Amino acid sequence: MEMWKCSRCDTKNQDNMKFCQVCHAPRPADEPNQEPEKKKKTVPRSAVPDQPEKKPEPFVLEPPKNKLSITLIAANLALLAANIIGLIILIKK
Image 1: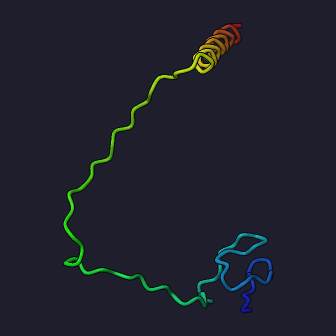
Image 2: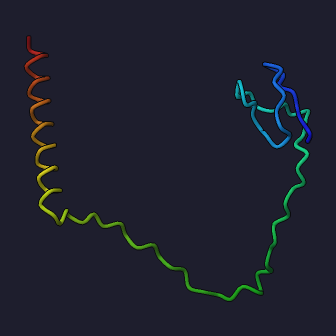
Image 3: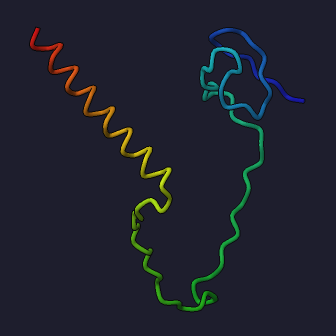
């Protein structure tokens, strides 16, 4: 297995690593990665049938449906209000 040596901490790293395992320094540019590049398979444009673009569905936030969620939201809002009041009191002192 091929290895490369980190220029910062002298750690030996595997050839497929882009960063040092110890100090996270990037692999030096003068030592190219030995992995063969994967060629992308391309399909000619004429072979792809024309399809209408699908528009993304809009994100809709639905209200909570169970009572526990509603109770937890109310409790969080009450705690938020108490914290804000406490901060105001603390700042005025």
